[in-house]
Image 1 (cartoon, helix red, strand yellow):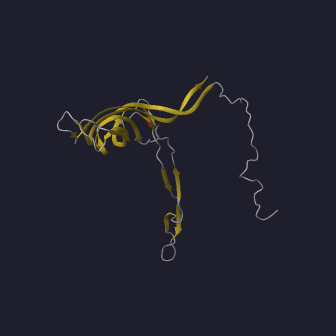
Image 2 (cartoon, rainbow, N blue to C red):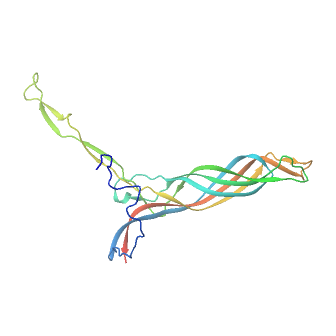
Image 3 (spheres, rainbow, N blue to C red):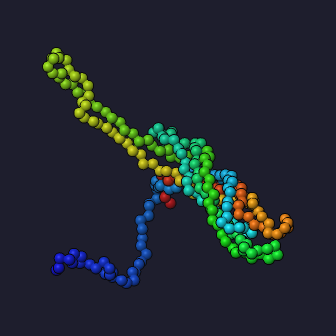
Length: 254
């Protein structure tokens, strides 16, 4: 065997290329009786409303808006909960809790832009599109329909041992140094690995008004065609979200 041949299997070529076979397999089934499972528990569902105003500038003159496709995108949904004191009656709480939300409305605007030699009688145009993101960020207080499992606090407790030491020369023999030993360190720590609540986006609804702010006419009067490059939009955004948390639940196995 040469020294350079360190691998006995050529990884560039498969050792076996053929169709695999399979058969049905029996899996273990939990017997009848109460079991504890970890499942997503719905803490609450909420209809959230926020109002947005945005100024949009187009790279080309806009003869008219042909279509606008919109969708709501949530980038942050964070439920802030208090920590548990460890008492049995404080493991769960109904709130209210602050719910921080952050996201944006993605809009794809399809529009017709007139050609440079357009006049009032005949206008040739091209169809173009512009994609913009209108951000929003808000906080709302929510009451939970189902109690949330509150996070446990991390703890670090230090303790010492008593030690008596002779004081040495210059002190009476009966006197001693009474304290803890500074050369030793003792600690007990606890870390709780808690389940963080999370969100699901169920549905969204957008009501919007788009108005041009710099429209110019192609012709002599207001009855003629025109174009613009800036518009202001006002939107009312409503969306439904669910707040969930993975919890241990006792169920009956049937």
